[in-house]
Length: 104
Image (cartoon, rainbow, N blue to C red):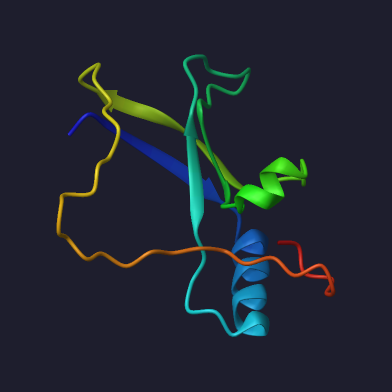
């Protein structure tokens, strides 16, 4: 274990996420977690947002922020997650459609 952190997600954000998942008929949603080297004025250095496709990132689409938090323990080492050879693990993604009024 390299770090433990917490994220606070407001109830209204959870409701938006659940409504969007149901409307799209999705089984879930991908989240991207960002850990910064510096804390903001509220003491937060962790943020979460709905994962974006490469196309969305290239098009500079706005991120849908989910929550914020902080790292509360670390051993000083965070390593990149690597999939072991031959392992078959599920992948999760958030698909975005331009023809609806959903937030992501």
